[in-house]
Length: 316
Image (cartoon, rainbow, N blue to C red):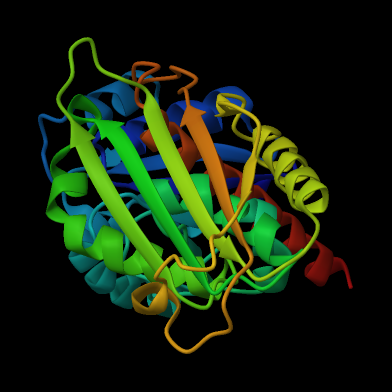
């Protein structure tokens, strides 16, 4: 599993997300190193690139990974395929005790957003990275909810159509369902809603996200300060993560109808609006693909921390 204090990883899914994640492991990580790239298309660029760089490859999926000589040395498996494929992949890998980091919306394991709840799941063996929209927006919802109750939170993630590959397009329903649930479970909102927009604009736009929270109370400046602090935390592992303007905290008029949003919860006092953009680091993909960059950045951060926790447990 480890050589010289470094843990080898395998990436399942040789498309855009898997290829970008490979380059991040190679360029950025001091504790992880590439072991294998796994796909199902022998002609994929990701497999060809990994082979040129000298890493083990297979186009036979997870079954092929298990048969590779390097498999016993693998400590972490990233799954960058699809929600349906991850269900099968997780079942195949379960007997081998690897740490699984799931970049699909399958949500078999607990949701993890590194800036919010990674510490709660350091011993988990299969963690789910929610979605790109979730990684960008859930920290903001959590920042508001740690100050005051949030009866309702809604996010809109707008991404360049060109950055949405077959996996993303095949998982649109799972995206909305998984993100909505994670807004509640991780973000702390009582009710959550998620919307994704694939924008065909040319030249392609970078990822933009809007977060709306209905806040029960709290001091507006304390809410703003919490959001700014959370933004700084996410920026530590996603440098292109930016607040577009000052956090807006506006009073909700007494006559504004909210029943369909908050149900029977007490009427909130503030409408909190946060506008974000995410520019990719262009390790493999164009800089406009911030939606993919934030997923691979969060996955890398999560794997590094899970490995560190496992090492600490071994020493203890």
